[in-house]
Length: 119
Length: 106
Image (cartoon, rainbow over all chains, first blue to last red; front, side, top):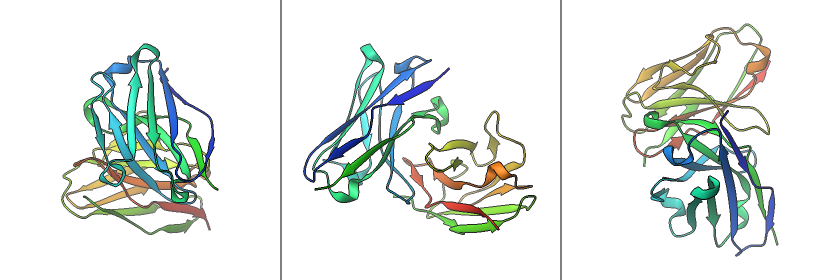
């Protein structure tokens, strides 16, 4: 069965960077795009970008351009999202989500990783 | 960027009620719209894609309709498990979510 397992919660200081991982299993990792979505406390869902695990090509939401980097390691079927120059309003749960083939919707999600930015 | 606006933000309803949530796009997105359900502390779950296609395993009391800029999610008879937040998402041009609708117990 498809599973996306994310790394654990993080606490960071303003100005620091955070790197969240998402390990995929139950399918061929390189066959499906991986997206990252975040959710601030009590707020809605915000799309951050996606990576093509096969080529490494990325698309980022304009809001995060220059601050986000998405990478992958195909040898361990893991995608990464690194966000730099953290601010307090980056405090959120970060999710990875698999894009469902040609359908372009998100059919499987990770459990979420809470990133807290606090001095 | 395409903006998605959901209404209402909060909806109070009882078990057995028919519930309708509306989602409007700032420009035409054809039928490239999905609906997700999210419960507290959990990841979103896909319910409907391409505006009206039911994801496998999702109960038939959920249905979606619309095209262009106006879309609706309908729950024909609200069940206890349906009290949750619901989000629309456009995938015509990149991806954007609505701000969400919380369905509460009346």
